[in-house]
Amino acid sequence: MRSAYVRIAMAASTLFVVGCDGALNAHLGNFYKNAQPTVAPTGAPTSSASCPQGGTVSAPSTPSTGAGTAFVDMTSSAGAATSNYGAVQGYIADASLGGSIPSPFPAAAPIQVSAGATLVFYNLDLQPTVHAATGIAGTSFPTSASLSNVQTGSAISTSGGWATGPISGNCYSQALTVPATAPSGTVYYFGDPAAYPQGVRDVVVVE
View 1 (cartoon, rainbow, N blue to C red):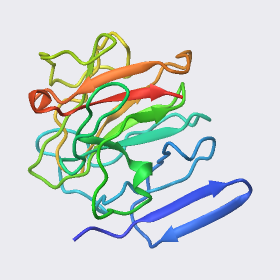
View 2 (view 1 turned 90 degrees about the vertical axis):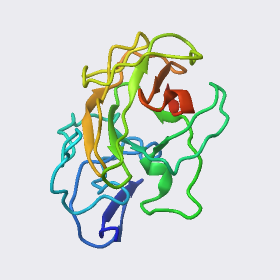
View 3 (view 1 turned 60 degrees about the horizontal axis):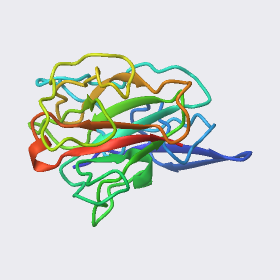
């Protein structure tokens, strides 16, 4: 059973509160640009006993900046879709789900963020399902890739060099910052080391 959640969003000068009580984490999505809402990730449990394969039970601390924090859900439910950057699968911006688990679940899509934003990857699936995200150097998805599955880095880069490592179900990655000087249109390619051959990959795009 999915746990209760709280969703707080600010639009203009009006504060909207939807849902019921639950664990709170700093959580900013694509369409909450300069606000700093506090939201439990979609489908997140009030608490998780452990993250045996990797990741953390609670969301990492993130900087309080105008660019905010964007949670990226990793889930087998986000099916393959075409995009301007190639086929994507397995990842979706949590904010696009609107604070609930939709049915049917939407297909994967590019992750749009502001320069200077902080990314946190979240495994939306239940344990023992494991997901990961690893940066890919270059300007396109390679046909094949040997991707590290060891957590490394605190910022994303077009030259790769970052990875979440394995993330257990309902667990979080480390915080990863988007370069504050990244120009609009910058694209960061990434994929799942274990499932890249099956098409599990996506992009982060600076708006």
